[in-house]
Length: 407
Image 1 (cartoon, one colour):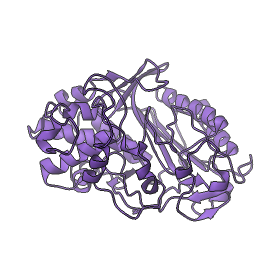
Image 2 (spheres, rainbow, N blue to C red; image 1 turned 90 degrees about the vertical axis):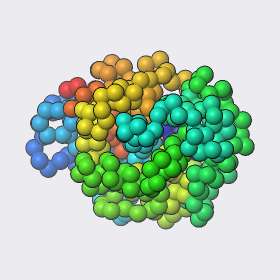
Image 3 (spheres, rainbow, N blue to C red; image 1 turned 30 degrees about the vertical axis):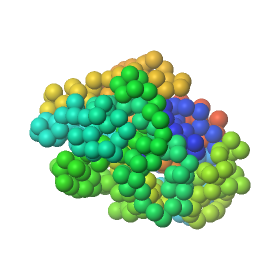
């Protein structure tokens, strides 16, 4: 549910400066690395470089890594690396299901734009048209502002009241109305439409609008409009701990191994404990909705990105709206990052790409595509926080994955 330039106190996206106390047996011989058993096409040096970075991350303390790159020529590269101590829980596979976290926002934006194409919604609609009285300044905030994070709404994940829900200790399932009510008690960050600030609250409101406009649940909308038409058997919307197939386990440090700068309310996760970690795979994320509730696989997401960028999911006019961007203005954001409607653009050194990052406890994902959708890539980290060494290596892997798209 967290991504790009925003984060809750405990979860910092890869683009910022994550910190995590390394723990467990993750020496050079402790990892389990695999490449797809089918002979791979493409540049062997690229494969070797990606595998070396993934192994380095595990050596530095990362519980597990998945990398998948499809450069549009031959078979995709698929790599996994896993710390030895995690094998008792699960043998990591390249097509395991993972929590996509804030990558969910791209799907929510796709659903909104499909309804815009059907003249059931308009990007200029004020939020109050669909959620009267539920959003502060809802008559001035439009759906476009929610989608591109220019609404000025406070990010609900920054409210300490949500800490138990984010750490697996809160059995109460927060509704969108309750979250929006909590946010209403916080002042706006700026007048609507005047600045950019990443806020998960925007997509809580978007999810509520989608359900109000269609009379259907978000789970059914994702299933009927995205997953089934594209044959995505491992892509679904869930706020619970349900999994459909083999899935990657996610971990956080236990309280004794938590970095000292982590706030007290985020030092203790629910879940089984071993090897200095808490297995948060089964935690019920009781506050993750339209901002981060989708589960998928690297292979499924590649197919989704291909369909999205090729125009299969959206008419040309709505795809152009999705790609209409504003500059990101978060702390430390480089000038080449811009945010569209549920998706980010970057003018990387290797070529122009569209991407998104997603982070929830135990899961960090990065999905990227070229503008045509013919080249796609993903990586997954089995934790949401990194120490300085892991951050440097993780950033190097992000760059390498992006450049691998362009062979």
